[in-house]
Image (tube, rainbow, N blue to C red; front, top):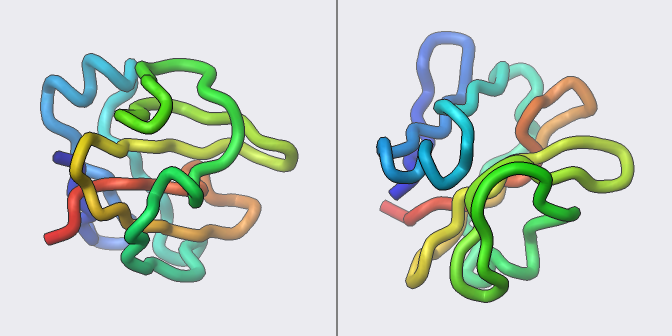
Length: 103
């Protein structure tokens, strides 16, 4: 399960080794100054944007990896049964929408 962690000046999406394999990505780091808000998202499938470029995805089941949408890039880590977390950032943020288990 993906976890949001504050590590010094960064917000880190901590991934398990299996999530890293599925996402084709290491932990995601976003500068805290680029984060505008973080909120629980009960329906994360409606919150993620764009198309998957790298990673694994089964619509409505799971989404792991990098996503591209008009105007930017994002990262999604949503698994079955998860209550997502939506993180919104400014244009300089590398991660625009992040889903993970609530907790």
